[in-house]
Length: 118
Figure 1 (tube, rainbow, N blue to C red):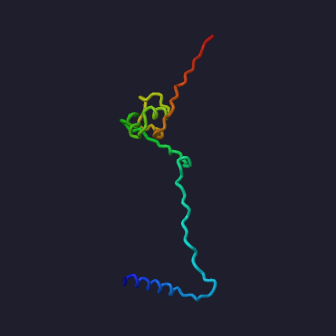
Figure 2 (figure 1 turned 180 degrees about the vertical axis):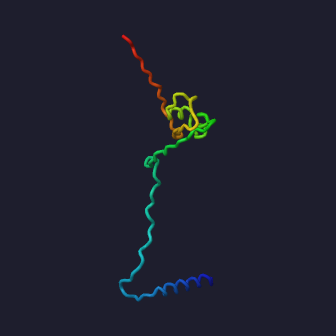
Figure 3 (figure 1 turned 90 degrees about the vertical axis):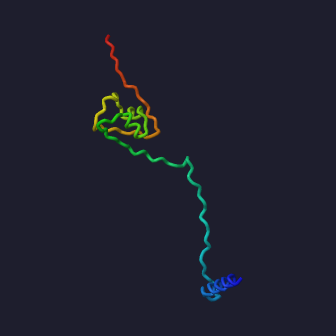
C-alpha cells in the first residue's frame, strides 16, 4: 500500500510541476490517435519487376545440360532461348543468355524453304 501512495504523490507532484494558472485558453497537446490500418497489398495489386537478363560465358568442358542444371532451367529452354540449332557445336567463350527460371520458352521449329521448279 505504501508504494501505491508514493506513486500517487509522485503523480501529483508531476502535475503540479507542469505549472500554469487557471486562466482560460489553456494549451494542451493534441490527443494521440492510431493511424488507420491498411491492408497488405493483395496478389492482384502487386507489380512484378522485369527480370534482369543473365548471361553465362561457356568454359572449356561445359555442356549445355550442365549449364542448364546449374541455373535451374531446362536444357530445352536454354537451347530455345539462345536459338541454338546444333547443341553439339558450342564453344568456350560463347556467351549464352539464361532464360528466367520457371518460364517455359516456346520452341520454334526451324523454317524450311521449298522451291518448286516449273
